[in-house]
Length: 308
Image (cartoon, rainbow, N blue to C red; front, side, top):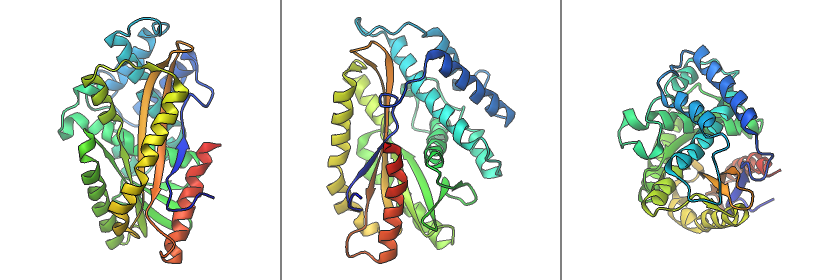
């Protein structure tokens, strides 16, 4: 087993698994939309409807041998965001709690294009709630019991204990540490209210990475294997800094979970694919109390299953 104070990654990308065909995506997305509407989620005229329509319009339009037009870049992100909704549907469709339904009914809010989000609750709320539910769904896919019975974004039942999951999305990478601090403060409050024994701060850097790619006019095309290795190394290198900066927040903060997704065209095949990865950084050490080490190892054991 990986040492508990080292970053442990978990691949959840289409590039390593069988990539769904356009028809499979269409069927899965239509099922997800039907499920959303059954819970009172307004789809017509929202970004969710645009995502499904974008999938239809972009079918067969992706060509890696030519400059990629703006509408194709948008289509790639349609694929990525539909993937999130499909995973939420497939993994959480059995949840019926009021707290969950409230979150679900807000995921269709916001503009279609990620770059059109503004730093206010009305604009970013839809994708914020989507990320919260997507994180919960990924844990559920591992067999981790997930609940929505507390004020936390989600509650994980790992190693016989209840962990609060608090999720943040970055607008720019400079706010990374502040968002982790905010999540840690929320977790401390959950512990004080008897809602959890510890917690995990989950942070998405996808919006920040996307913004940089727009500003630098980076074309979403490349060698999937090289990109995967480079991104994995990049987030792994953050481990020592995270430990130095945030280990003081242990044991109430069990770990930091960083997520990114990057839709792109594989230049070898010309096909659209998606890199979507979680990397976990534990904050315990060999001198931590036994219960803290046990909790950390239980988290890693759960996440490592995604590598299989």
